[in-house]
Picture 1 (cartoon, rainbow, N blue to C red):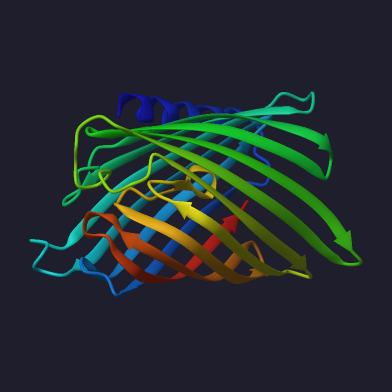
Picture 2 (picture 1 turned 90 degrees about the horizontal axis):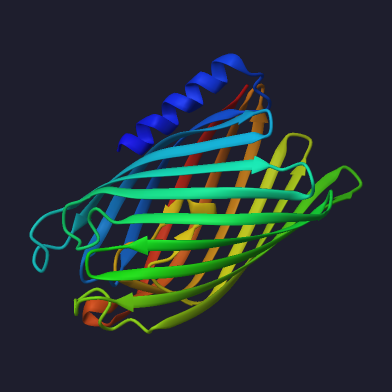
Length: 284
C-alpha cells in the first residue's frame, strides 16, 4: 500500500509541474450473468480510473469493485471483490518503450486468491510508426500457487480512406506452479497456450471493436494488465463486440462479451458468462 500511495503522489506532483497531453478519466459499469454455473448467478462490477500522459511517461490506474450473487449452498455468502490495477510506461525515443504493471486483489471474501498480487514488466519495439510488438512477462503470487504468464502482442495500424483500422494479435502462455494442494489449482493443467485477435475501427467520431480468444486459459491476466481472472474457471473461448461514439470531450462505449468456461473445483463444464459493459471516457 505504501508503494501505491507513493506512486499516486508522484503522479500528482508530475501532473502539476508538467504538460499533460491526450489524457483521460474513465468510469464503467458491467453486468454479468452466469448460465449452468453451480456457484454464481449474476453480478455487477463498478470501476473508475485514469490514463495520464506526461512528457514521455504514461500513468494508468483503475480501481474496481464487484458484487456477485452466489448459489447458497454450496457457497455461504455472496461474492464481493475489490481490485487495484496500475501500469506505468516510458517511451525511450529510440523505437523502444518499457512498461511495468501491478495488480492487487485487495479483497475477495470467498476465494483463496484473496490478497493475491501480480507484477509485470514488458518492452515494446516499434518496427514502424504503424507497426509494433510488445512482450510482457507477468508473475502472480497466491498463498497456494503461483502463475507465470508471457504475453506477445502485435499491433498494426492502417487507413482505408477515412477509416482508421487497428489490428492486434495476442498470444498468451500460462504456467501454473502449485505450492500447496488446493481446490483451485488441483484440476488445472500445468501449461496453457491461448491466442486472440482484435479489430478496432474509427470513423468520423464512431468506434467499432471486436475480439475473439481461442484456446484454454486459467488464472489469466487480460486487457494489458487491467483484468485478472482469479477464480478457478478454465475458459476455452471468448467473443466480444463493442460500439462507441465521441461526444465533445467524452467517449461513450457499449460492449458485449461472451465466454465459455469450466468451473474447475467440481469440473462443471459449459458455464456461459455474458457481460454487458458501459464505459464513459472524459478526455482532456
